[in-house]
Amino acid sequence: MKQVSKFRFVVSTAIALLMLVTALPVQTYAASPYEGYTRNKLGDDVHSINGYIYESSIDGYDLSSGPFSAPEDVFLADDGTIYIVDTGNSRIVHLNKKHELLGIIGDEEGDGKLYEPKGVFVKQDGTIYVADTKNQRIAIFDQKGKFQNQFGKPENPLLGATFSYSPSKLLVDKRNYMFVVSDGNTQGLIQIDPNGQFKGFYGANHVGFSWSRLINKLVATDEQKAKLSVVKPLEFSNAVQDEEGFIYTSTLGTEMNQLKRLSPVGVDTLNIVPRRYGGRFDNGPFSVPSFLDLAVDKDGVITALDLQSSKVYQYDKLGNFLFVFGGLGDQNGLFITPSSLAQSPDGTVFVVDKGRNRVDLFRTTPFAELVHDASRLFVDGRYKEAEGLWNEVLHLNGNFDLAYLAIGKSLFKAENYKDAMTYFELARSRYDYSIAFKEYRKEYIRENFAWICLIIVVIIIALRYILPFLWRRVRIMLSARRLAGAAHIKGGVPHDRNL
Image 1 (cartoon, one colour):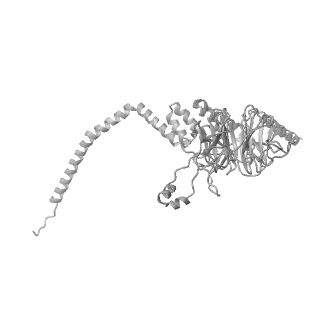
Image 2 (cartoon, rainbow, N blue to C red):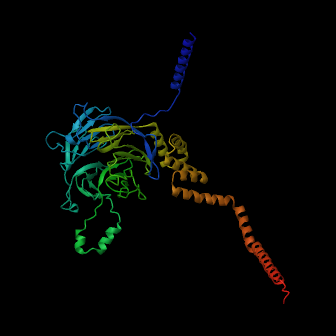
Image 3 (cartoon, helix red, strand yellow):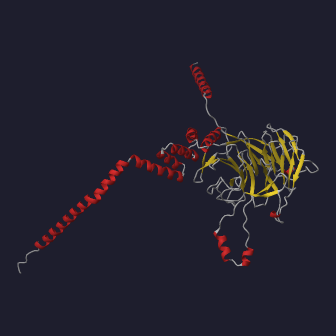
C-alpha cells in the first residue's frame, strides 16, 4: 500500500508541475523545416531565428478554375484581392482574401484573349494592366475583367528598326504613365504615356569600367575592333513603385547594385557606394545573384527574390540586411523554380513557384516583427527609442550585426563615444568606429587638457634642461673613468729588474 501511495504522490506532483509550467506566459516560435540564419559583415552565414515561416500554398486545385500552369507573377491589389498570372493557361486568376475565386481575366476569343502573359498591375480604381508577352502588347481590362483597350509595340525613330518588344512586367504611376520591362531590352524601362505613345527610356543600367576593354580598344586594329562584341548594359528583370513615387528595380546577373531605388530623373538613390546584395556562390557555374523580382512595403523594407539560390532576401530602407529564407528543394518552405513575389500590408510574403505550379505564403515570426519595429525607428533616426528593441533582438540572437550597429548609433548620438566604439567594433563597422574614435579622442583631450599640458611642459623642461644636464654629467663621468683607466694602465706596467 505504501508503494501505491508513493506512486500516486509522484504522479500527482508531476501533473501539477506540468500544469504550472503550461500556465506560465512564454514567448514561442513556430517550428521550421529548415534552420534559420543571417549574414554578418564578413559575408559569413551565422545561426539566427527564422524571420519568416511557411504558412500555406495556393495551387488552384480547390478552385473551379482548375490548377495553375507555370505561373509567372502575382499582384496584391489595394482592396486585398490577389491577381495570379497563370501563364501556362494564358489567363489572370482573381482571388479574394480567403483565396476564393472571384473571376478570370482573359477572354476565350477576341481582343481580350491573352497569350502567355507574364505580368499584371492593378490600379486603385480596379483597372487591370496585363503584360501580354506573346501578343507583344499591354492589354487593359476594367475591374470586372472586361477588355477595354490595348497598346502594341511603340513606334518611334529612337527605338530603331531592330527594336524587339516583349513586355514581361509593368507598373503604372499616378499620371497613368506605364513603365514596361521588355525581355531583351537593355536601355532601361520603357515609358509609355496614357495614349500609348513612347516617351523615352528610364533609369538604364550603366556599363562598368574595364581595363581590359580599354586596352583592347587602344591596341586593336580596325578589323579587330569590328569583331569585338559590343558590351551592353544589363536588362531589368522587374520594377515596382513605393508610396513616395520612387521606382525600385531588380537586375539579372550583375555583381553589384542588383537592387536600385530610382529618383524621378532615374538616379540610383539606394546605393551611394557600390553594394552587393544576395548571397555569395563559391561553387557551381554561377558567381553572382540574379534577382527576378522585388517588393517594397510602406516602411521602405525591400524583399527580393534571387533565382540562383531560390532564396528571398530582405533589406531595410537603407539597404541593411535583415532576413533570408527559402532555398532550393521540394519541401514546403523551399522552391523549385521561383519566378515572382509580392508582399501584403500585414507582412505576408507571396512567392510564385512556377516549378511547382503554385504560390507559397510566408508569414512573419514574432522575431521578425520585433526586428521590423526596431528597424523602422532606426531608419527614421530615432536611435534612442530603438535601443531597447535592439537589446531585445540581441537577447534572442547575439549574431544580429545590425542590432550592434543601431545601438552604437544610439550611444554615439548620446555622446557616449567610448561605448559606441565597442558596439561599432562588434558590428564590424570600420567607418562608424573611426568617427566615434575621433570624437572620443577630442573628448578625452578636453577632459584631461590640464594634465596633458602639464605633461607636455614637463617633457619640454626635461628635454631642454634636465636631459642636457644629465648628459653632461654622464660625459664627465665617462671622461673621468677613461682618464683613471689610462693612468692605471700607465702606472701599472710591471718593473723589469734586468733593465
